[in-house]
Image 1: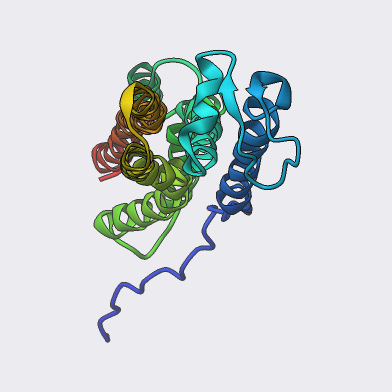
Image 2: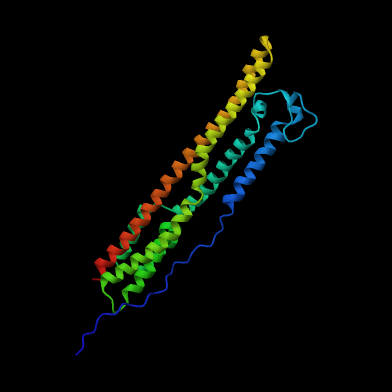
Length: 285
């Protein structure tokens, strides 16, 4: 009688469905924030009523003098101030967007407790309750675990392949589900990391440009008036540095917070995959 080799089971259709979500915010938000930054600089800080000697002709960059308040002095920091305000607004926008996304990805309840409950149900071979726990979790870990559980259940009744091959199929399903979840978690973080570096450089550039203007005025005049203009110019120029460093600090802090939380979710996803494969190997030898 001829030897019958175990045939590899036909590839099952993956239960993982790609999420269809546009990332239009990645280019709309920065552009909108820069425009809004100019509007704030030109029409809020640069309003005629904020200066004792306003430039009535207006235009793109009115030459106002005599700011009435300390905050209004930011206007005289130069044309880079709108970019810095726009960078700050962009950071705020992506912080809110990432917070909502990561909060949703983390799901409800403690991830470690969720995995422990799933392990308990798998040990009792109660897959329906394990899937129910995934529905309650409502996060990335629950989504990956649920996809793995569907394949887990399918492999229990699969014939013609070994336990090791079944485990490989489950692992592949988990990897596919993970590959769809991780990009959603890490999306747009690059804006925070980029602004963290660029904002500081823009602030320093604005300060240098302000200092150049200040010393140019000093060279063109003399006496006590020149010293007053120099001190005023330095004060105005430093607003650029303050805006740049402040924006950069917020971006760095929030970037680190988000990456830490994402690492926690990623660890939970890895642990969920390990739980499924180890449980299948132990229960269905």
